Length: 418
Image (cartoon, rainbow, N blue to C red; front, side):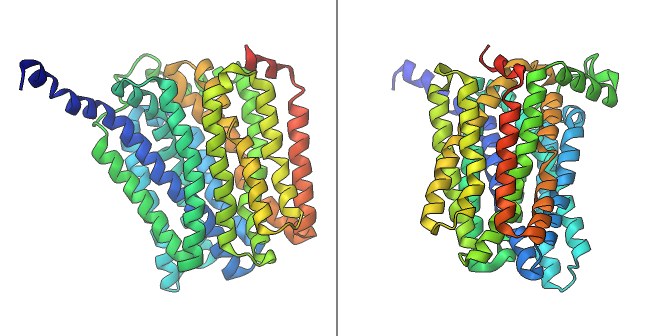
C-alpha cells in the first residue's frame, strides 16, 4: 500500500459520519410518515366497522387532527429552545405509546368512544412537534453532510410522497389481513423506530444554538415576529389559506368519502390501499419530473394545472361508479398532477423566509394550511349522513374547483414567477 492510499483510507468513514445526520433525519421521516399513513387507514376503518357511523368516523379524525394543527402552529419557539432532536425523539416515543394503547384497551374491553377520542388527540398533539422538528433539522443536516439544501429538501419531498404510497398499501393490506388493530400495532412500532433512529443517528444538541437577542424577547414575542413576517408576505399567506381550504376537502376525501365508498361498493379496505398507493406512486413520479424540469417552466400555470388535475377530479372519479381498475388508474393521473405542487411550494417558502425565522414561519404557515383538516372528516361525515355519498362527493368536488378558480384571480400569484 502506498502512502497516498494509506492517507485516503480514512476518507470514507469521515464521509459516513458527515452524511449520517442527514440519513438519520430522512430515515426518521420515512418511518414516522409511513406510520401516520397506516394510522390514517386503520383508525377510520376501525371506527367505521365497529360503530357503522360515518359521523363518528369523522369525529375521531377531527379529534386527532385538531390538536395536531394547534400544537404544531404554536410550538415553533419551543423547538428552537429545547432543540429539534430532543423534541423529535420524545414526540415519536409518546406517539408510539398512545397508538399502542388503542388496541390494548380494545383487547381488554375498556375502549369507550371518549377514551378513543382522548388517545387519538394525544397522538395528534405529539405528532405536530415531531413533524416540525424533523422539518427544521433538514437544513442543518444538509450542511453537516455537505449536500446542497435543494437536494436535501427534494429528498424529503420524495420521501413524503413515498410514505403516502407505501403507508396506504401497508395499511390497507394489514387491515385486510390482520384487522385494524393489527395495523395499529405496526403504527406504534413505526413511531418507536423513528424515535430510536433520531436518538442513535443524530448528534446531541443538533439544532441547538446559543440564545440570541431575538430569543431573549420571549416565547410570545417570537411568535408575534413570525406572524408579522407571514402577514407581510401576501403570496405566502394566500398560499397557506388556499392550501388550508383544499386540505380540508382532501381530508374529507381520505378520512370519510374513500372508506364509505370502499364499504358501499364492496371493495373493502384493500381497495383504499390500492387507490392511495396508485395516487402516491404517480405523485412520486410527478415530483421527480418537477425536480428535473419545473425550474424551466412558469410556476403559476404548472401549479394551477396540477391543482385542478389532482383535486376536483378525485371526487368525480369516486362518484362515477367505474370499476376498481379504472378508479385506480384515474387516481394515478390525479396523483401525477399533485406531484408538481409541493416542489413549487417548497421552493417559494425557502426563497422567501429568512433562515433564522424558518421554524416559526413554517410552523405558522403550516398551521394555516392544516387548519381545515380536522373539520374535513367531520363535515364529510355529516354530509354523507344527510344527503348520501354521491351528492356529497359532487358538492365537495365543486367546492374544490370553486376555491382554486377564485383564488387564481388574486394578483399576488403573479409573484410565483418572479
